[in-house]
Image (cartoon, rainbow, N blue to C red; front, side, top):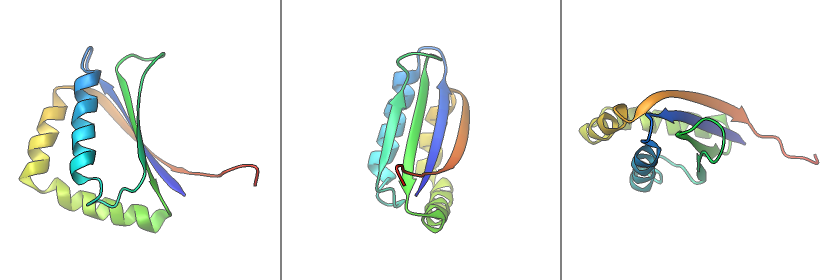
Length: 105
């Protein structure tokens, strides 16, 4: 299994607004993009106004199909309008692609 983890640092005090935008995006586009399992984390301790999104994929081929669909979505005006709303709320972001191993094996 593959997990994509996106970590965002929101501008001070904007964590809830940024989380709402991502929740809206996943509700609108998640199924179309092939996302069948995902989670959103917000900080309780540590760096404030941190948001993490995790999406699970069966394998790298499934992730590649997701990324191809995601790239197509990026070209739409709807995505550009949504993305524009995130820019003023976001300080930085990071993407990790992780291989999941369960234990005991």
